[in-house]
Image (cartoon, rainbow, N blue to C red; front, side, top):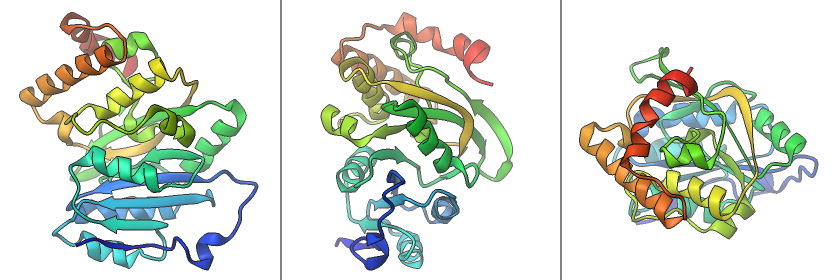
Length: 268
């Protein structure tokens, strides 16, 4: 049974902020009660005043709904109902959001400081780029002070996408009209629909982009794309498929180049 809430449609959400572009932040969650509150708090604590936070829950059976109800007055809109997976939920979020710019903040991720969204907004304003991305720290899920890996990809180019390297998806913000023109995430991808979307946006839509050289997101270790050898094989198969479907040639040999390039150049 669908349940929903949030402040959308109330007087609090109708207050006009004409001088500030609205930035929509979509959080997808399923049984994420352990970490979701940290995610919500990091959005609430942002200094930027025109944020629309939309949370799409896949019908959680843990305490996720309790947390959503707790923050009902702080979230623009939340809905809990069954879906077909993370990319289906992302598509629902994009369809629901009303901001000029859209980004995804996973339910086990957090903004790295309270000025992140303000800095993203300033970058959009000064560059007029279609998309902006930045840096991300991956931390020990049991000790958030312990940085396991620093993820820094400073370019969104066909040559990097061809070898399977992309900016960190939780740092990627894009004009909503670019998503409207490109279409939704492909739900028949299990791991790499976010990669396919970036290939589609760059190659087919020819979006412009700008790199914000700051750490904006803290990500707990783990995730579906880090699930071991078989997950890696599946990921690379989907990367090859994504490139092929969007007219960008690649092969397994190209993908082998990803590891040394990441180690030597891109990951700080």
